[in-house]
Image 1 (cartoon, protein in one colour):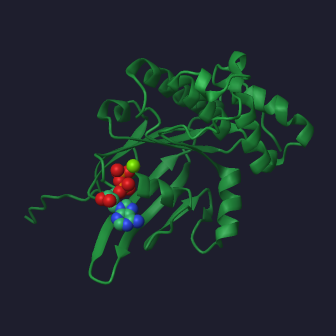
Image 2 (spheres, protein in one colour):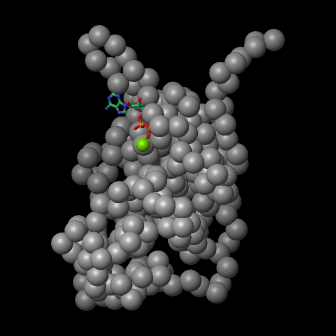
Length: 257
Ligand code: ADP
Ligand code: MG
C-alpha cells in the first residue's frame, strides 16, 4: 500500500524501535600478499524515523559501511538486520529487489541523468522500482509529489544543467523518495555544495524524518554530524565515538588497568 508523502498532521509515534541493526560487522579485502581490514567489528543500531550520522575522515570506511547497509557489498563477517530481516544469505537478485523497495540512495555528485528533466529523473526511478506498488497511471503524479516534498514542484521541467547544485541534490532526494522506501541513505550529500546550498539540502533531508523516514547520512563534517539525533564516528574502520547509537566502541588506547 502506498503511503502519502505529504506531511500529515498526525504526529508519528516517537522514534524508539531500532530499524537497522549492525552486528559485529567486518570487511576484509584479501589479496595474495596481504589482508586489508576496512571495517572491524562495527556494531550499532539506528532508530526508526531518526536522523543518523556516520562521521569520519576520508578513508575511514564510511562508504564501505553504507554499501553493507544497502546490500551492495557483503560483509566478511557479522550481519545487518533491517526490521526483522537479515540481509545476508540473499541472492544478488533478491538483494536488488529488496533494495529497490527499502532504501533510497543519494550520492555526493547527484547522479541525475543529464538529458532528462527533473520530473523525468524521478519517473525513471519509478519505472525501475515499479512505482513501489503504485499503478502506472499514478506515477507522474507521484513524481510531482516527490518534487513538491523537496520544494521543487516549479522546477519539474528543468534539466539538471538548468538547476543549482543544491536543487539538483534535492531532485536526487525526490528520486530517492519515488518508491516510498522507509530508509534514505546519503553518502556525503552536501560534500559538493557551498554552505548555503548544503544547509538547504540538509534541512530537506532532516525534514523527511517528520514524514516517517529514517535518514542515514555520511559526512566528514563534524558539525553536520552533530546535528543528527544519533551518530557514530569511524576511524580506520573502527567505531571510536558514538552518541545514541548503541554502538560498541573500540578504544585505541586501552590501558588494561
Ligand atoms: P570513506 O568513505 O570513509 O572515505 P571508504 O569506505 O571509501 O572510506 O574506504 C575505506 C578504506 O578502504 C580506504 O582506505 C580505501 O582505500 C579502502 N578500500 C575501499 N574499498 C576497497 C577495495 N575494494 N579494495 C581495497 N581497498 C579498498
Ligand atoms: Mg566515501
